[in-house]
Image (cartoon, helix red, strand yellow):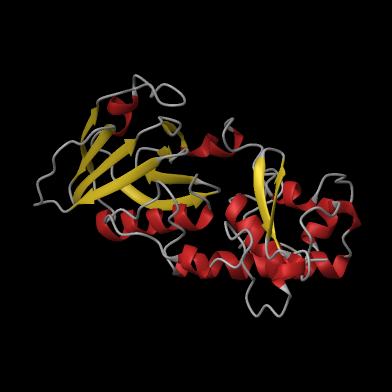
Length: 280
């Protein structure tokens, strides 16, 4: 599933290419996504102008001039293609929705159909079922340095599991939880409530640094994810531990015969990668 850096990359690409265009035509070829596309979506968004774009958690929001917002979530395998206004496009397998705008075309493709395309009154977004229980954004400037310490104090689960809890901090999935914990030198199996305030402050700092670096790299391409121009993100080439079982971690001076390198365990059904020597 695309995580915060991938969704931010896609949002920025759409914003740069389409900008404040008007939505001229919408073609829906399959309404059966994770939730059925609303029957009135075309009527609501057609001929509306896009005022601004926003990423909230792993959602992309198109805020329109008719007081509605178009909501898009890529699910497990969703992809976006963008075509210039003068550029012809051909439908491909799993293309479900096409948005023709005054400044180009956006095509939504989703092989597994776990994504979402919805619309909602902009003023009601924060109270809608998809947003009302979301936690804070990692880059929120109003977050106190000890935010995670305050959130974790009653969390009796492993810290890796706590990081995946979208009601605390949004946008962090499996990849970036593993990478952030490595950078903070915190073992993913430790109980969240047992982390010190200093460790939590360090962890939030490392989360932001890892996410920022990943955004600059265009995200991580492992299976389905591509940028809208078809190119791949390259942060996977910078992963320290994720998907590197048995390999040495960066600047490793361990005896691999003894340590067996980076370890892989399963937590809550998700693969976790970490260095048992550096992460305490």
